[in-house]
Length: 175
Image (cartoon, rainbow, N blue to C red; front, side):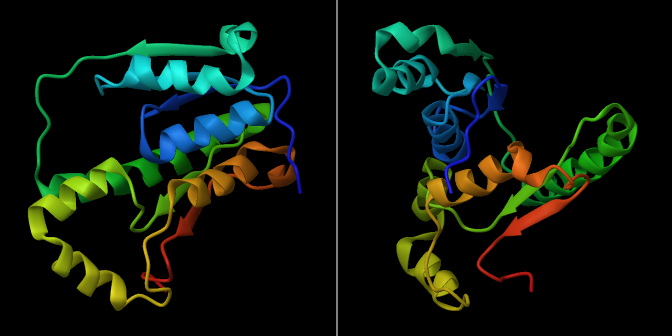
């Protein structure tokens, strides 16, 4: 099924790589105007690459915004807490904005092959990652495009009655 996103304007944080980039690319292919934001120094390169398939005439549909950050905290507990906070915020905002027709959902991906995962491999080693992945029901990492298709569904009119949900795409790890 080909979901058209013509006439939609979508902002994506983390749009320079991984799932954000794959989602931006898919949405642009389906006709959306996309704004990407990222702390990555690769933001401008990503914006140019996203504009390329449509040609320079379509570049007006891609907007890049950059925020600089001097450091990131690498504490597992804080990372996990922040992800749970996103789910809580999603549910609260959906209650607030549902009455005016705004749908708000979260996507909860498992192990996705992204530059962030590459950093994890550098930290724990490929063997440790392979051991983790091999115990999963589908013993592989997902590609960013697989999660992008779920996001496309949630942004499309096909999910018109879906709100305040946390959609899980984690290879059955939490089942």
